[in-house]
Image 1 (spheres, rainbow, N blue to C red):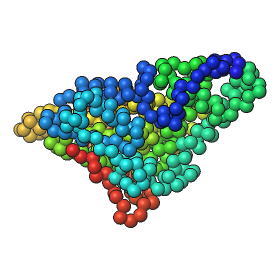
Image 2: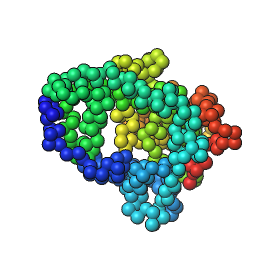
Image 3: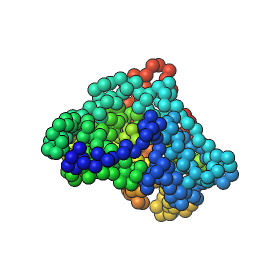
Image 4: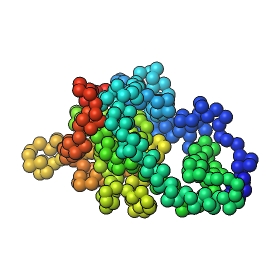
Length: 371
């Protein structure tokens, strides 16, 4: 290899056991997944310690994937205690990622039959869009690399894999020579390529996204409407591909000025939907229920002990105003309005069983999300 790829001649692949290490939680480097999960637990304990119940076990949930389960456990060690399990402070419930779960799942992308089987506009829609966008920017990179390496045919897949290598090696070692192969413009195109994957795979650009995401959103809204005695902390751990549908159901980060969806042939520079910001590795979305005192004059009655309740959306430590419903403190949405919005969104998205083509008698809702 020559030119910007000359480092490859002395480069060592970062794992000698890919069959064991691929798709698992990273344990080394400044961005290790284990460290991020534990640190997130500590930070959220600092923020929400007043909500932790005394003398009561808190249930939390993870989909049945090793890296998801490990993330949940490292988080619990940071949030509750290193001995969270043996001391009975918390209990992890693993939810299978199987089609038999139907609507009673954390991973509707595995249970929505039509989404799985629709090869054009279902699960593969995101990857198909990515391949289409490759043709927009990668051929120019291949030509540039071939100047110093004329005997090598750099395919679109090769070049995109090199770009991905930059991120994965940086996670493990803190830096990567692969990052220097590409220009700033190359990286802006790569960023948009990843945005398109998530947008069309299960986000706002996929017709199945809202109905899949509404399952968790509706179950969570029911919890938010419950009294504090029912429990005030609920943690669910899933894949990034399951966050996209929830955001689609919530209807935030929607770029309404594009008709009808994000363009596939050029970068939409002023877009809201940026996967690196809304669903990075270790990303999180928090729905906070705020209880604010209300005065007699506000309520028009003589009881000054009433409270008004609001829902505030926190995405990776950034408060996001819900479009059309952000009149409360801190850009929050009044709970009653939020609940009605979710109900109407469910009607717009459609019935999960009908849209997904499930058989009669299928599980219709999430049943396990409770303390």
